[in-house]
Each structure stands twice: as structure tokens, then as C-alpha cells.
Length: 325
DNA sequence: AAGGCGGGGGCCATTACTTCA
DNA sequence: CATGAAGTAATGGCCCCCGCC
Image 1 (cartoon, protein in one colour):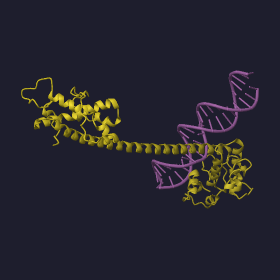
Image 2 (cartoon, protein in one colour):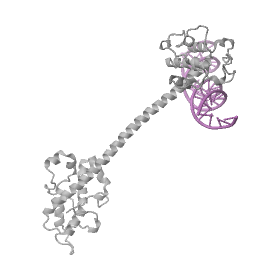
Image 3 (cartoon, helix red, strand yellow):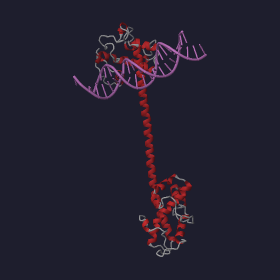
Image 4 (tube, chains in turn brown, yellow, purple):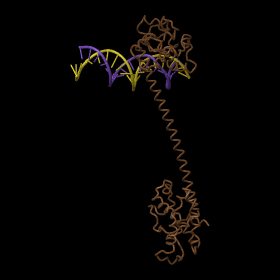
């Protein structure tokens, strides 16, 4: 058999096992490939090797191996068996049947004891050195395949964890948006509650107060967060529009005072809904706001009405806050 | 008993060769 | 027909173990 008649080793075995078309049409090789080792042939068949090649390949023919019967004639292992092999010194590929036999032995035990190596070499008509090299290379391939499988498993695990993280992150962002929306609604309700306590509030005063309210709520929230340290309000630090001063200190106007009727949420709602409960600022701040508004120690400017409540901020500083009613 | 030495085997990186598209 | 890629047999170096002296 010419060199071109040989088929590739392990890849051919893989193709055989997958019932793929083999890259060789040599009748001799195909004949050898027709041999399918019986499961019972594995183990305990040969005196030394774990899988008996002669019995499997030649149906128990004791004359020797199918391809290397004349091996004894030339101990270099590269004898010209009816022209099937390459000349000595040239690297040649193992036949598919030999590779199959070696694979079966490798599946049983991937290490090669000296006696087993000699037995395999004898049955396959190969040099013991060739059998050892084949096992060594096969172990290397096995290791690389194992590493590849482990890498795939780790990557799949990583991808799953990353997907979970992304989902959680998206959910967190959605909850943040929901909290912001609820807070805006709360601001509106708070302002509604404030108005009946004013005796007189002209349009300018309303505008000024509305501009200040975000800062007031933010300060209340900060006060609350400093005591509760709740992660729910982490977004406050990310929402600079709620703060007028950049150093995070809330206004000195924020002093506790009595304001038990700020919210129009029922007490049950506040108690049962953690979001609402956390969103609601401590009640005292708003009345104190009123007090500071109307009883400021500093005399009001001449241009400022005695009942105004601009807190020293100009209207232009808060142009984006719209009075809700 | 301790140490040097040589042989054998495994692992690893690399080379050389073959086969195929 | 030439060529590059892929697969694999084979080589060489290094290390470890073991038996012998």
C-alpha cells in the first residue's frame, strides 16, 4: 500500500466513530476499518495488553497481525509489507485499525507498563518505542481536549453569571426610575399639604417655594439616609438636581418641627409599603420650613413682602421647577 | 547509610512529515 | 501544480524515580 493509501490516525478514528466519510478508499484499509471491537474484547483478552489486537482484527487468527506479519523479518518496524509502508526513516502514519486498537487500550488505561507496551508492539507489529510515543502523544491530546472542555465549562458558567448580573442591574435601574417617579409624586402631594397653612401666597412666593422644595426633600432624605443607611436611596447622591449646595450639607433651615399632617397617605399605606415609608420625609421639616419662612430673624428686604418666602434664593436660581397648581 | 551514576519513563515544546482543501 | 492549514509521528530536553555500586 502506498503512503497515500494510509489514512490519518486519530482523526480517521473519530470519523469512523461518527460514521463520517473516510478520506481513503483503499479496499485494504476499508477492510480493516470494518472491524468493530466487541465490548467484551476490551480487557482480559490478551495476556499482557488489555485489548487483544490479533483476536479483534483477525478473528482470533493466531498467525499474527493483519499488517505486520513479516515484522519479525526486519526489526526496524518499517519493513515493506507488500508495498504498504514507507521506506525506513520516513515518518509514516499508523493504520486506522492500529489506531483503533491503541485507542481501545488507551481507554482502558492511558499509562503504559513495560510489559504491556511490549505486548502491544508485538500484536501491532510496531516497535515498542512507537507504541510508547503514540501513548505519549495521545495523553497530550487527551489533556488538551480536557483543558478545552474545562475552558468551555468555565466560559459557560461565566456567561451565565454575567447574564444574571446584567438582568439584576437592569432590574435595579428600573427600580431606581420607579423610586424617582414616586418621589416626584410625593413632592407634589407635599406641596399640596403645605398650601392651606399659608395665609397669603402670591404667585412669586409659590414659585420660590417650589424651587426650594427639591432641596428640602433632598435634605430630609439625606438626614433619613444618614440614620438608615438604606441602599434604596443611593440614587440620591446620583441626583444632583435635588441639591443646591454641592458639598452635600443640607440647609440650616432644616430643623425638626411638628408636621404630622404632611402626607395624605394613610398610615396603613405607610406602614405596609416600604417604598412609601422610605420615601416619606420626616414630617417635622416642612413646618419648620414655614417657620423659618415667616419668622426669619433677619429683617426682610424692603422689596420683599413681609409674607414672602424666598429663603434668600432668587427665582432665577431655580428656573426648572414648575408650580404644580 | 549516604551519595553518585546510569537507565527508564513521563511531560513538554518543537520539529518533520503527511494529507487535504 | 503550488500552497497553507491541520493532524500526527517523532525528537530532544528536562525532570523524577529506581536500582546498583
